[in-house]
Picture (cartoon, rainbow, N blue to C red):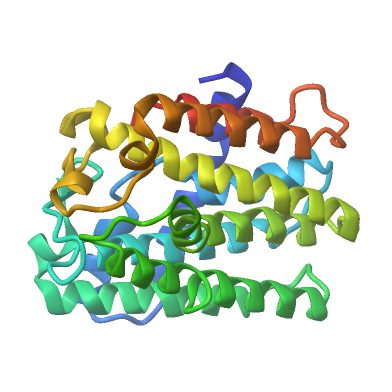
Length: 294
């Protein structure tokens, strides 16, 4: 990992972690539910989504007192989606981030409710924005609802389930992942840009960047599912093939998937050439997404 990016993550991650833990502590939640929610929040992870919110602001040379709340909200949504994704009725995974999945520890009912609670708590946080114009705050709330709901992540998860045991075309596969993975990543970039008071031309370029890193992220995940070990991934390797999912390597071959990965990486970098920094954090994140080994 690039040294500048590592310093940025090392500085910001404790802020995000402490803020989310504080939000849980402040809320009146039954102890068993709070424990289940905290278990998944504290399970680690790369925190890519909240970091992208903060990196967008930094690259646009802006600050916002609401940035941490927005970053925490999107990480809560992401965490809820992982809890639900691991359930027996979904991907039926036993491990996440190297630890037993939430339902393996707390049971299916509490795991479902922990995911539900994290989702609603995320929107509660967005209702507390104070440094953002009310119109922009409403825009961010609507964006997160779209990105995480039926026209975004949840819709993508349904398309993903329906695509099992079927051979999807490349266009169909991209549609799945633009919704399932890309929508929430796009939210991070666009929300950061709104907080930074970026103009619409800048936002459009950043949205193109987000679309390309969203697809690159999923292609890399598909590649790692067949090239990395369970220990490296922190979850069961080879699960895509076991569930007969359409993946980029399955459609294009491993070499073809890697070519596609490089194409989206290049397009992402082209989209942010307008940024004044010679080495923008968003560019470093794009590099990290395609170079990671877990």
